[in-house]
Image (tube, rainbow over all chains, first blue to last red; front, side, top):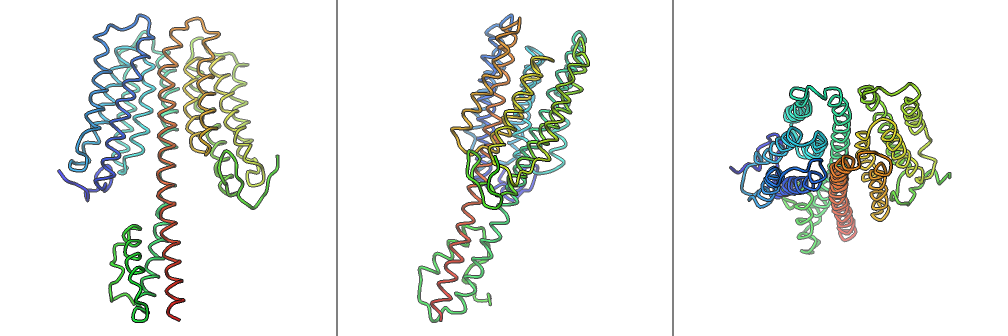
Length: 228
Length: 199
């Protein structure tokens, strides 16, 4: 089940990053489900206690996702947060109120944040679209109201996804540029060190260079003699 | 209102290079235009459809979006970013009052933009309070208060969660960017020390 090198829907995630994203998904699911409870209580007529089972199951799944051993399991488990969240929203819309479709925006923002493969982004986009359009199939009485609701929700969803995606891509590009700059600086320092080593018995510099190279993601060992 | 043209300026929006001011200002203009454009078909689906005069809101949205796109962001003060956010809030408030309470969902876009551009936590909290007040405002004039309360209780968490995601994303990647910059500077400094020591 280990897949730190598997570039699937979520790209090649290291164990720490997988844990961060998995826990983030769990928190979002639990918080979103909790927040739905007061919104449900404001409905007229208010749902029966048993009908809060949906929100309660969302909280339980969210907490379970939080405590999963993310460093040891596959990234594929991240799909659980996305799929369960979408199912929960679709049921909430069908059983209680079409306003709950707004929650799809949170799931879509999370998906835009964690998904790397364009095919997976497309597949989830289609799923969110279907979940939004589903009330048109079973709610004939309020067709126009449903269309209005969808025409408000869909663009907000698309705009939020674009903002998250744009933000992530722009900032990651800048991070890459700085990392390359840092690696270049480390390589330069290593080259100078290799050239002048006999005259410079400063072990602390060697050690610090090694640390810097590792921290900046430089894969070449800094003291390799083959470096000119 | 005019500020310095070449040096970064510090404000609630942090220290902004002129090019960054332009990018953020134009992003605001694009969002206002996009929000207005996508709101138009939604307004046509309302029963009964709004009168022609009601579409003045759409026209004002398009004009304000275009204005924000052409503003000389490199030369004007970052204070104008407040105008972008407040214009967004005002437009959504009017659309909610005139068309339907579903339009208050557009506050989510304004909140995401604010979370992205506002650096000072205190200012961002003030904006979040403003969004909350704006969301609650229709309770003062709508007939079915309970339905609107349900509406607010759904939108508010979505708004706050989206703002947190945007903020978290920006902060975490910027922190990594800062770390790499420090690595690079330290490595460059070590290189300089080594060069000096070898001579």
